[in-house]
Image (cartoon, rainbow, N blue to C red; front, side, top):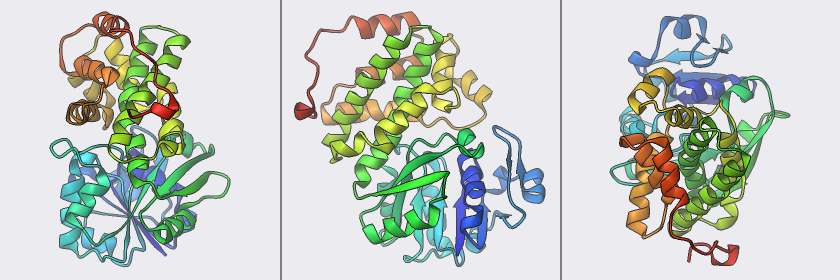
Length: 337
């Protein structure tokens, strides 16, 4: 069997490393601008995390060669580039029978489409699955165990991917038929992770963290159910599981963005310092736009958007959130109403 990984970023290389023994052939594809000598020649990456790939892993910028004969193609690219990569896949001759697995978490800004919707918009007949869950790359590289969801409209496809990507003792996979819920849980939690990092750097305490997790999940549920997600999915691995991991760990890029924001740094400087993509930055705008479109209240997301894109101070953000009009807390049987 052959695996192709699209995207030589931190998570893409981590997956190529993790799945080495599951496949006879592994190819990592990236644009020429994203490939460098140490990676191509030595199969080694040092920043933002150190990854040493097996010598059998091929690194290439030739997409047609990369996908030829691949049983599974893992898309691990920035969500802003997903549509362009899909267009390139079409030109390169991807076959409908090849399973494209999206592992990127985000929303396309101009259309507010989930990644599966973007993929289907360009490749309508493609076999497709979604991989999402609490998967901090550094812990995966340390061999620490985690689990994730594999979602697809076609359960035969989901089960094939589940068996192919499962790594005993390290990476346990569960199938799920709720593609919408799995995608939205994984994407929207990144905004709350920024809020969590923000609160951490302001030393607001564990009570505040508990508040952020629960009120953040309420926002995710309100938006997701309006878009057709199942509530049970959002309390699973790709929802609550991913939310807890990213909101609690400085290993999370989104948590780090929030932490630096809380210290008064500006987003352009933060992203330069980070040196990698933090999807929650753009997703905060998408979440606010979805809230307006759906008529759903998303105060935490609005606050993070303001913190990212305006000159409002951290203390002003906190004051706005804590002094909002009092309201009833949602009950599970009324969620989405």
